Amino acid sequence: MFSKVLSAAVQGIEGYIVEVESHLEGGLPHFATVGLPDGAVKESKERVLAAIKNSGFFIPNKRITINLAPADVRKEGSAFDLPMAIGILAASGHIRSDRLDDTVILGELALDGQVRSIRGSLPISVAVRDQNISRLLLPKENAREAAMAQGLNVYPVESIHDTIRFIENDSHESPYRVDISEVFSRSAQYAVDFSDVKGQRHVKRALEVAAAGGHNVLMIGPPGSGKTMLAKRYPTILPDLTLDEALETTKIHSVAGLLPPDSALIATRPFRSPHHTISDAGLIGGGRIPRPGEVSLAHHGVLFLDEMPEFQKNVLEVMRQPMEDGRVTISRATLSITYPAKFMLMAAMNPCPCGYFTDPTHDCMCTVPQIQRYRARISGPLLDRIDIHVEVPAVKYRELTSRESGESSAVIRSRVKTARQRQADRFSPYPHVFCNAHMGTKLIRSCCSIDKQGDGLLHQAITKLGLSARAYDRILKVARTIADLEGCAAIETVHLSEAIQYRSLDRGFTGT
Image (cartoon, rainbow, N blue to C red; front, side):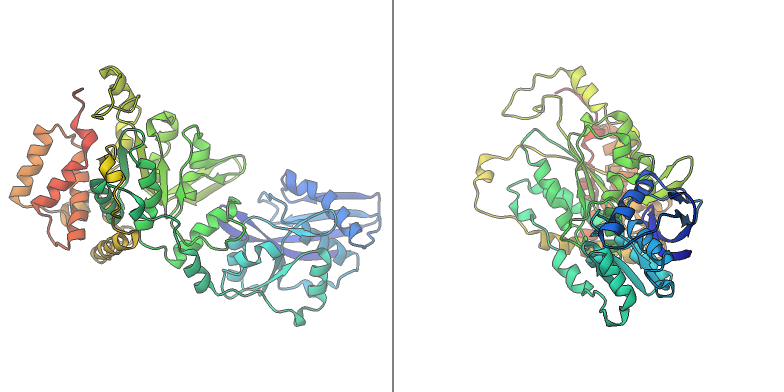
C-alpha cells in the first residue's frame, strides 16, 4: 500500500517542494522516517500516530515507512506532520489517493488531531505558486501570510478532519483571499515620529543626509542626550518600502519565526537593536541548521548598535563583509545558505567610558589613555564603512520644555525621496548601485567632481584638521548627497564644508 503527498520546506528564505511517500506493508509494527530528517521530524511519528487515533481512524499494525524526497536535503521542523498523517490514511484506504494531486499540504499536529501553525509559510507559498501547483492546504493561522503570494489558492484547515473534508469535497470550498494593497497600506504605519524629538536640529539634519544617501551613521554623545530616541525614529524618514521589498523582508521574519501573529506583511522598515552581549552567530546568523541573524532581520531597514564599543570586537568585525556585499553566506559541512543583508548601520557610543567627556555640565573622570583605549575598540576598517559621525550634545532645558514641535517624519521623508530619485536617475546604467553610499572609487571620480576652491578646502581639511586619508572618499560621497538634497547638479564648497563636519572621529584625539 503506497501513497504520495506533496509538501514543502524552506532552505534559507526560499521554499522547495517535498514529496512525502508513505508505504505500508506486513511485518512487525514499525515506523521509520527516511530522507535526512532532523530530530523534530523523527519525533513526528509519535504525534502523527496519536493524532490519527484520536481523530477516530484505525491504522492496522503494519510496518510504516515514510520517505521525504529529495532524500539528499536535510529536512527540519514539524510542518510534515499533517502530510505524513494524510499519506498514511491514503495508503491505508481511508482517502482516495487520486484526490491528492496538485495539492501541497503543511501543518504541525497536536495529539488530538488539531493543526498548529508553522514557520516560513510565505516563502513556501511563493515556491508552490512558481511550481504551478494550484492548491495549498496549511494551518488557519498561516493562511493570511500565505495568501500574500498572489495567484495561489490557499485553503486554511484546523484539523485532520478538515483536511480530509476538503480533499473529498474540494469543489465546494472557496480559497482564502486577501487584498494585498489594502494590507500593505494599513501596515505601513509607524508608531513614532521625528516631531517627538526636542532640539538636536543639527543631528536631525545629519540623519536626513544619511537617509538621503544611504549612509551609515555613528552618533557620539553623553548618556541621556537622545541617541536611542533618534535612532528609533530614523526608519520613519527612510523611503517607503516597495511591495517587493516588503515581501522579501517578510520572508526572512517568517523563516525566523518572528512574524507577529496578527501581521501578514511587514510594510515598514525593520529596526533591529541587539544587546551588546550578542554573539557573532546571533548577529550574522548560524547554528547547526543556519538561521538568519540580526543583519538579515534588518534587511531593507536599520541595524542599531547602542553602546557600540561594548560589543565584542570579533562580533563587530564579522559585520564588515555583509556591510560591503549586502548578503551573508553561512557554510556548514552539509549545506551553504545565503541570506540577504542590505541594511543601514546606525551606531551610538559615549565619548568616553564615563560618558561625560566634552559635556559642559558634568566632570569627566576618565584619563586620556582610558579614552583612547575606549575609542580604539572600534577598528579602523569598521569605522571606514561609517560615512557620518555626528556629535549629540545633551538637550538644553529650554529646548526640552519648549512647546514647539519640529518637522514631522513625513515632511523629511518627502525630501529624502526626492534626493533618492535623483540618485536613481544618475545610477540607472549601474544595476547594483542605488544610492550615493554604494558608489565605488570609479563612480566617485565621475560623479563627485569638485572645483578648485573645493579642492583647496579638502586639502586644508586633510592637512590642518588631521583628517585621515580614508575620510576623503567619504566626504565626497556625503557632499554629493547634500548637493542632491539641495537640488544642485554640482558639489559646491558649502556642501563640502557640511560634509567635513560629519567626520569628527577622524580629527584625532587631543585630550582637551
